[in-house]
Image 1 (tube, rainbow, N blue to C red):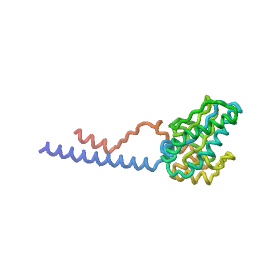
Image 2: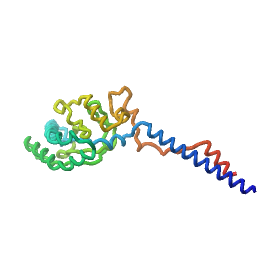
Image 3: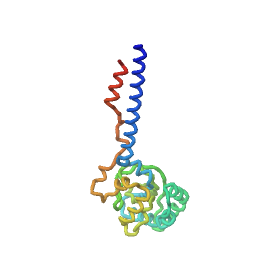
Image 4: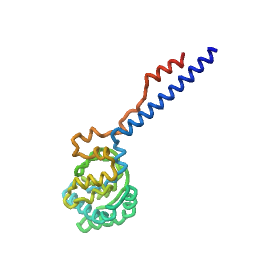
Amino acid sequence: MKSVQVNIKKIIASAMVATITLGSILGFSIYKKNSNPSIEEVSKKIIRFHVIANSDDENDQAVKLKVRDNVLKYISPKLKDSKSIGESREILKKEDKEILDIAQNTLKENGYNYKLQSTLSNEYFPVKTYGNITLPQGKYEAYRIIIGNGEGQNWWCVMFPPLCFVDVEQGKVAYQETEKEMKEVLDDKEYDMVNNLKNNPTSDKIIDNTQQNDIVIKSKAVETIKEIIKK
């Protein structure tokens, strides 16, 4: 009889442990859902565009901007109405050869014979600001044109959503246009994280998953029930 009572006690205790554990997991999931977005959540919705100069020499930097202008003039009409990151990615892959030809011709017209290469890949970038958008350091998908040795400062913008095509000639990005385009792909919390016009510092809103320790969920109730089972 005593053995039966002990077994019933263990079954009840086990059921309670399972219930509390499930509740903890669900509660943690809700917490994660409502917490601030991570860098990865933002970066997977964006394609950056970088033109990297041969060097920081004044002439190399000047021709870099000419390459930028001619490439954007060509690719802008093809990307500006893209509705998804996947669509933009496929356009860039399809137009890659033509883009390189335009960049190479620009170099030749200005008296340069630098080699050129392009990549569409995930790369690590430091913190970068473009208009009112500040992207935190981390890995982002980027279409890059690398001129010559690629050792100079780069010019960059966001290709999807298509921020590159707003006031390019003046080197400015209109806040209203930036907000409109970014909110097409980012939710409110994600947009707040990269919008440097917010009162709160952007760095306070960043969660870098690579730096977080594993979380161990402990419950006093669970520990108590475990003690009951041992008895």
